[in-house]
Length: 156
Picture 1: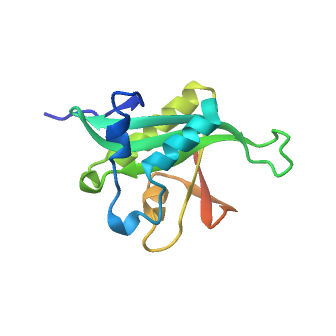
Picture 2 (picture 1 turned 120 degrees about the horizontal axis):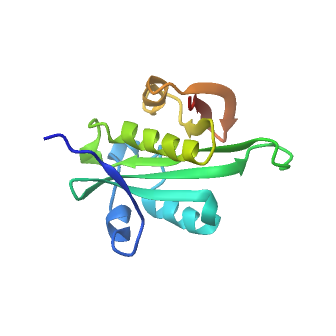
């Protein structure tokens, strides 16, 4: 039987499960831990959309999206973007399609809110997730955010 993962809002009942998720040791320098993401979600309020990825009742990952953040250098709202802020798939759950599921779910939520593109960033290099994002159709914009590459996916 094929199961379909789902996203759950972070609640008092599942926050410990979310915080307990950890990527592989060799990936920890690539993505912030869930506890930092939840602190940022609290600080950014409605701009952040943190969700637990659950399959057959067990937590398998964490995803956090952002909505309508101004990327314009002048801060005048000329370049509002929505996208993927964090993606943490538990070490023992990687390679099972949960990351693809999460990216598609974020894209669906952006479309539901009227958006047409999904923005994300990633660390370039052999140990980073660039091949994953490019394989999903993301295209580098030529921009960087700190030491990360910025990419976008058209939501047709």
